[in-house]
Length: 108
Length: 108
Length: 108
Length: 108
Image (tube, rainbow over all chains, first blue to last red; front, side):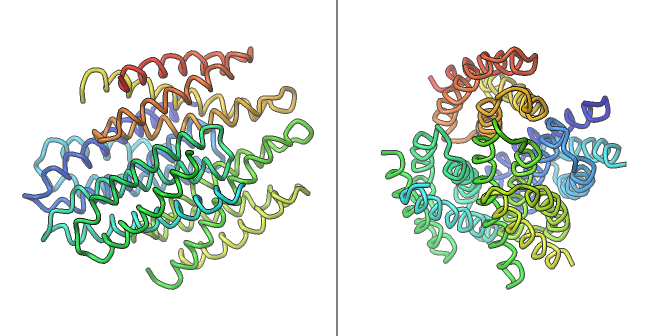
């Protein structure tokens, strides 16, 4: 794996953890706040980052295209998560933005 | 694939569709009802059924064990979905119960 | 789900089964033939079609982009599978081409 | 997440990387060696560890059962990988054994 791919992989793995934590916590807090946008995107982003991580780990011929799409999905999730004050949403937004930036580099 | 596995695979594939539909609709209705248990289990069951479907499609040596666990997860999801009157929750509960029964046969 | 999405979803689900069957059979025949390209793409396409199916089932905001990428991956797999005479490779190639066509319609 | 779960999650994440690397390298070396058992189990274990990681990240009610099954799958993969001298197979075997041990602790 190249150094770029290694860094991007780490960003994806961190993001998956942030998404799943945020997903789970949002469900608990859902009774008092509308977090449905967050919950939906957390799940989708976690799946997308898993695909991107796998692409880098297996040196996929579609790595660049998968990372380009992963960057789009992470940016959308980051924009949504930023709207909410919960610690896990803010942490997730931060992980999304970092991951999107690494994925853009891979896709270039 | 055996006839048993073929039937179980169909039940898993139907269940995945029911889970994902229910997940998506529950998120929309979430503002007015507490569907967080349903949303959580819909996602987990969809992942579990995907693993079970893949196990049957690839003739996995862990097919029986995966189907046994899939039956447990489907039963839990069916029990939760049954509590809610929405059409998609009731449809999901029905798919869960059918899938759990097929998975139990595979696991036997 | 729109009629287009419904048809595309069916194509993806059929493809996943074809990929996983082909993956498993190729591994058995691998000793006598070089099927590594097929095995690699079978796995990647199955993952990609799972993501696309989930996108349609959950009415994802990224449905079009995911389907566009899925079409690319399916076309690559179809081209590889077509080179091999085994029944499962030919069946997989056929499923890939059909799925790619449906995914292109969704992406349009 | 408990400290146990945190450690187990790390073991799963490391394992996924080891499986996918081993999968990809085995496909390249496949022409000269029979690595089909390894390739098959690498894919299945990666999927199983992804499910286990997600279970810990989302605090799943099925965490223990998923980890118990994950331990079984990792042990089978470790036993297979140990038979092969390639660096990636040996690294994968080591990751499998470590992950199986952590999963057993979680399942207890």
